[in-house]
Amino acid sequence: MGFWQDRIVEAAKSEWVYFGQQIVVIDGDQESIPHVGTWEDDDDSHSDRINQYWRAVGKPRLSGYDCKQPWSAAFISWIMQAAGVPNDLFPPSRAHRSYLNRFIANADDPFAALIPRTIHQYKPKPGDLICATRGKIKPPEVFEELQDLLYSWRMHCDIVVETSGQTLQAIGGNVRNSVSKTILTLSPDGYVQFTRARPWVLIVENRLE
Image (cartoon, rainbow, N blue to C red):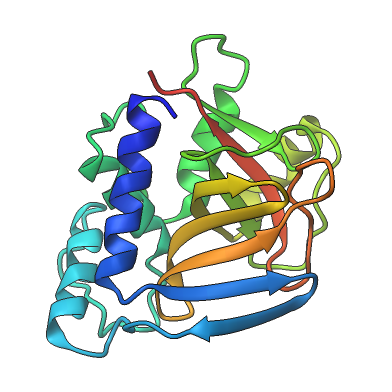
């Protein structure tokens, strides 16, 4: 990993430990939670931690007790700030599609630091983001289809923290009410696979230097 990727991964791991190391396993279309951690509204300290995430995106009145407010994009934004990534490279966003659309708009820039890819085009590595739709849309085969569809999608993204063989581990916020590590099986040649349990559709390649 490079300097920025290492800082992002370590920040995500630290938050996962703070929330009790909840694990979610996705095996094909099945999902299980072999270890349950601390949830967003279990106590004041963890609720206040989520308030810090919300502050990163300009929502200081929200906390973990606001359970109906999805906070996964606020979590990603806070992690990027905690790692020291400048806001002009990763804009803090209340919704994942806000920063994803910006990355897509700049995808042809040869100097872009964060590049969106379809799951068929690119094999993820630590420090990247893997993103799923909250709907039932199947993943596009080519990038041009991604551009056409993403504007209307409701999204969720996690930070890749480890890959080994056909196993990928990613940490995200607001995953089963906590900061969770999701473990999933890659294809035999190392690509993210679309599943109904979590409909992965794109990866953001992290080229920060």
